[in-house]
Length: 335
Image (cartoon, rainbow, N blue to C red; front, side, top):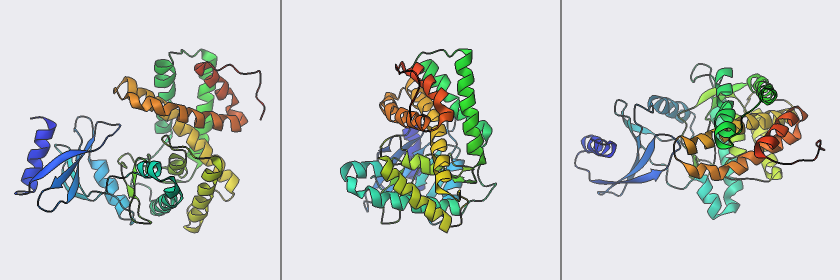
């Protein structure tokens, strides 16, 4: 029995006598898929997650849905589960992502992002150690290693020499020291415009949180404001960053006392994330056949280069990227 037939059979047994239709609800960068079940009797909808057990584990989704939901933010409610088959029945948070809404009406962005910042502060304020896996050195480093493995070697077909590998390792160590020194909180890990759903004012729907960890406080903010799918002018990003920083301080969150220090943490965390994302987008293409993610690489590379340009400690990494990208530059950098 194929996955769709097995899922249909599960729903029919779960909800006897209720006729329904199934249609794709969203695409996903993993092996999961989401289907929208529409019921004929009252027109109501539910989301069904299909997560093949050999590739995905539903238990973290169930755990984090409970953990985040307890803070009062809007997440899918797990109404039924079959962990052995990899099926979840969830409440439907609608079909309008932040990204789709802003592409339709850009003037909505400020209100949407203020709502997202409010929800993020609420989640972080509930953080407790021990609930989620640690976002530790090993994981942070393993993520950055995707850059040389998948982006540089596979996508750009460049073999690094010993000197270049030393430059890359030095940049990784600098980032790790900063990231691990940041106060730890709950980290969604993909808190951005494709995983936030438009809801009532102040109530964004939050999806795709199954990979949540306990780690650096600026990670989700960097994910939100340096989004791989939509770009903002730095003036706007600074405005939202300051609003977050003020709200976080008011909520008693352990952000840096000086905004300049906090903003550097935010920038360096974003650089760690974007080095990882370059590797992930290349891997999604070559390993998983999802070529559309290559279209998002130029924006991620712009974020990466701008961060390197701003801080002298990353100038060697910038020169390495010039070589990888075959960018001809004048001798030296002036900033």
